[in-house]
Image (cartoon, rainbow, N blue to C red):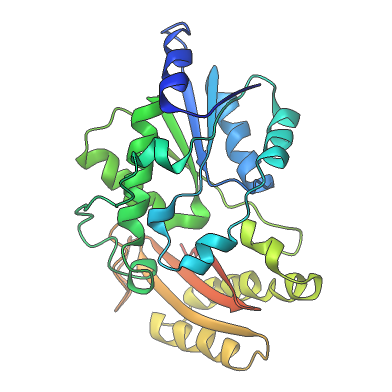
Length: 281
């Protein structure tokens, strides 16, 4: 397994490989877990060369403390990747190499996708996401790039950015990977106590129940029911629960036949911000 720390050395290596081989790319911020591993496995299945980046991107954090707390576990990440395949190319650049000492996010027009849910609670977050993903895609030049559906809003925004910037890459969304309890896998889960990690399974349990209710109840009643579940929970604090269509992320007012909907949720557990979502139809 090869590790590169600069865009220049990575490009030099990739340019030395046969041109006809398909290249898959999995961008991550490290602290890898089985959810990341599933993306890498899919990339290996569908491509002949796979690059995994490990980079904690400062421009997508609106909270300096959150950035400082984000785990940096390169050696453990390398070990996890080696267990999957020794042929993986790892790209772990410095902030200076990526941003050239100008740590500023670009401004994008995401046509409103960035104004709801996460965008409403995390100022400039998606401009930061777009900036780093664009930079990494240009550095790696993959045929396909893989992202988890746990960050479904981010997935749509990345697809929009790729389209508007005319980048020649297919963006592949991959299913959410869950712990045995149903809790969506996340690097943030490691910050939970063992007890809370079990209790946080209530989030997915509530999502599944909301899907069932959405089949027979109105969106308004479903949202009110979810809100009540968390108001009555002594340990979990609901930040938001939204039901939107899956294309524009417009919050639902009234169900429209043949339109696809998805439920999105953010919950605080022991001060840790956990996100999840579920397709409703």
